[in-house]
Amino acid sequence: MKIALDVMGGDFAPQNPIGGVRLALESLPQLTKLFLVGKPDVIEQELKRQGVSSPILEIVPASQVVDMSDSGLDAVRKKKDSSISRAVELVKDGKADAVVSAGHTGAAVTASLIKLRTLTHIERPAIASVMPSATKYWVLIDAGANPDSEPSHLVQNAIMGSAYARHVLGRDNPSVGLMSNGSEEEKGNALCKETGKLLRQTAGLNFIGNIEGHDLWETPPDVVVCDGFTGNILLKSAEALAHAIFSMVKAEIKSGLVTSLGGMLARPAFKRVHTRTNADEFGGMPLLGLNGITIISHGGASPLAMKNAIRQACENIKHQVNPHIEAAATAHSIALHVRS
Image (cartoon, rainbow, N blue to C red):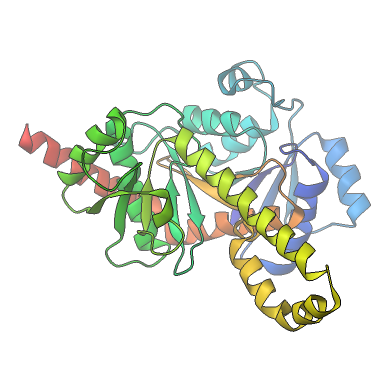
């Protein structure tokens, strides 16, 4: 499997992306090529500093870096030789099977959309994030690609998320819920209400209706659909809350001798829960709906997160979700045409 890595992307580039490469080389034997895209002198220096070398590594020059202050569109139009643009081009040209970036999300989305284009009958790509709960993992879509969405886009999100849950998470008939402020059909804003009407008419989709925030962490549906603005707030709030709870528990355990002893006994259980809720263990999120595979990681991604983002890219290559998304979207489009 051939992966293009945006080495200059992220709050801790290039050290954390290269740290992820080091871990990936140790644990992902399915890798046959890793393209390291960015400034060659910077990459070579960091590889040497961390003692990373392998015959499957190839440096691809890119002279520009996208700043967080750049807009997504300007980053692609004005910085044509940026590391994210060059990395996506490797996928477009068929040299790489997927691209991984922890850099500017807007630039990654825009570059991927412009250069790879969307699948047939998909208007906009959407970020799918696998989320934990007390009972199972579930898919949040959209987790931040499109802050402003129309009802038709959310229906496509449901179709893409359902295909991902079926073919990657192994759910036979994925249940789909629409994020709202109440379970009743009449609840929600105008976007929710209109989307709900369309989802109830979408053949082949196991739509269970509106869901609320408290549904997400105990018995969630397999797929939770929302616009990118709502989804990104939900994602970041959940990650921050998990971190805060572990910090509070850790502080309380250390507050006394008895609790410290109890904490030592419970340490294996805490580690298991931490692994299930730690964003670094997931690594990255696929940008679904494109003629190619783009994995987006957090700007502050650790080396472990970068390694797992590369692993996510390999899993998406393996499962070949795109043909399934395209088939479902085409069937939906045909059904709409028949009804009209």
